[in-house]
Image 1 (tube, rainbow, N blue to C red):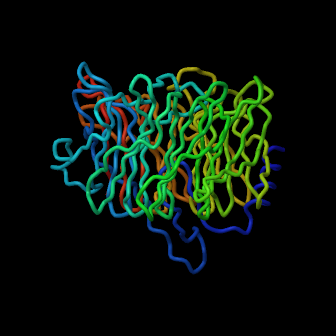
Image 2: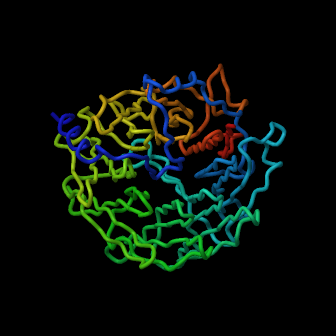
Image 3: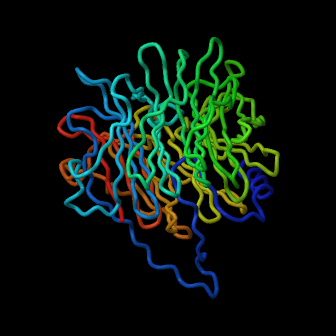
Length: 483
């Protein structure tokens, strides 16, 4: 009954629409292709798995590293940012590098790259060091954050604290100049700030969000980067009251920017709302989507000309289940849970390819042990929703879904090491592999690393993956490239 209801709502919301969408994750726009068996169409080329280079260390070998984040452009340019922990004589800091996805083997080493420290080296950079997230509903969100527009302009945002004041900092990279700008504070306050989100827009602008605590509530603040002036604007209010430690979703559709967020109603209910941001007037128009039940792991995306929200919600049996809502014009159509399996879901990810929207999540099954969790997924389109599929049954923390713009979708997640799979429309998910590894981390044919913090980006021919790995007992950022 649940699947039937959902199919009807999806059909109303999506039928007759064309095109693809974008989501929180770094991904290229979906690419059109001939469906299998289409008369008169060329047969698709035989499947060939993407190749990845062995991993190499990017962070300082003498400092613990955190929170890698990466992006790649269609021309092969890769941008990466990460944080490094404090030492006896230095505060924690944020670093970035610009490199190529097609680096020759001799240049795939830290000493051959230009690495820039973006902060002032005086105050402490705040990083996310939540190590217990694997069993929680919310996925891991890195800080600093990185976003790159299609023209190669990059932005890194982070939080910094001098012991009294918290500041929201940004640094920009303009490819014509080939270097990062000096760090610029868009906000300084004696109120605690946390949970930043950064997204580049199709027109070259960018939006930065963060949570800022007040006396009784937590506000969601925003600031925009304007490509026509090459500068950041004024801070504005997105929402006056949001839930702490709950993901904020941000996506773009047809030039409009949307933000999905939660606010606590009471001990048993959260309100899910969507704000439409006007970056000219610095105003947000808000619409409530749902206000019943405790929620978490909110993600949003544009798909086939409409907006889709997916989240985890505590059901009548005491488990978190996957829920969704799709917009139809200016209205949101609430839908029931799209899976009815026991045990908690979390770490939800979404991405679209062709006329399919894929939803993946970590499913706890019967165990609280992270390496025994399942990675599950469903696919939906105007024709309805698929059955739940188990992609992997031995760990599923922090899945990342990416439309590569090359006719394939890519998934990366963490178990006892970083796992990977590719999806081809009409053929399904391919074998689960672990191509990301430093040669020194391969033991008896398996890759052992500490990749709970990981990320991936693919754009056409090029790709980059980054994760944490223990190198000589130092937690380090390691990356793998693909061309």
